[in-house]
Image (tube, rainbow, N blue to C red):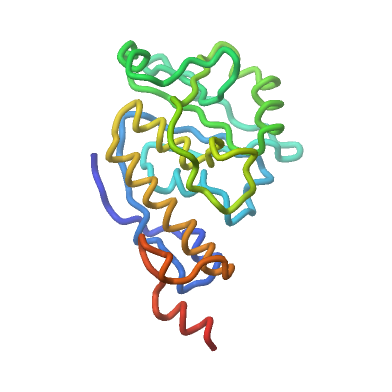
Length: 217
């Protein structure tokens, strides 16, 4: 697994320039390919985490769905040399546990819908290209650390968390931990910018002095 620093804009750039955390975005190369299918409503949201995941994972791509008069590309969702899995906790979904993962004999295309639950449910039901792809779900785990949007319960995960845990199950615990650290930086700096937490509560990356000085002025 290769780790570099990414020269991409991060959500911190959109919050307040001194809060940029581009240097915290790793470049993680994995055999597992992540294909995020993002609803167009998520494109403008600084709290969207799927885009951050694709910036950190070199073997990933982001496709936009739901744009008016524009059909989402579906090529490559199923590839002959890969096992395609849809990360979607439907009634027929199989848990991504060690027993299931041990039966996978080829690299994985992990397809991840991104959007609200109603949007995702309609999309999975209506999108022909997803028919026949095995649904998978995460094993039970710790509560979500994502505190930027209201969740139905603390077992609901943001997209970055879901991808991180899926990667941990499929291929690399180290990659999972790197992505979870990145999420903590996003959450802490966003909450600090909103006045919800103090700088002393930003334990992962801290708040740059120039950000604090800019707020004071």
